[in-house]
Amino acid sequence: MKQSVQVSILGQQYHLRSDASPEQVEKVARFVEEQIALVMASGKAVDSLQAAVLALLNVTALHLGDAREAEMTTVANRQIVDLIGRIESSLAGET
Image 1 (cartoon, rainbow, N blue to C red):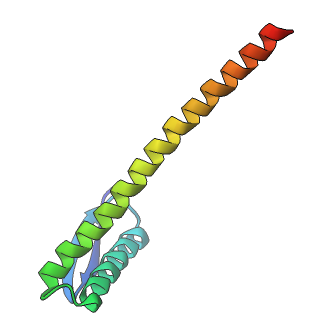
Image 2 (image 1 turned 180 degrees about the vertical axis):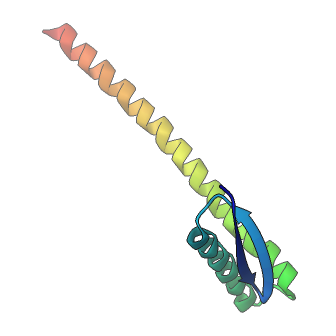
């Protein structure tokens, strides 16, 4: 069941509806605000909108990198299982 949660990001109030717990929604909002604050502290953004966009790009790059890494791990695991199967078959054929 969706709940309404009010969060504040950069002094703006947002009313969000989510199936997640209010604590989880607040945690996400804090993370977003922290990411924007990091960009703003770096001096790479002129205003809050630009900082928000740059923070979103940073988080997306991390997320996509993690997804790619997970995909590569899955492929590697399949290859390992295949190699183990070949080795076991080879050893069984030698006895």
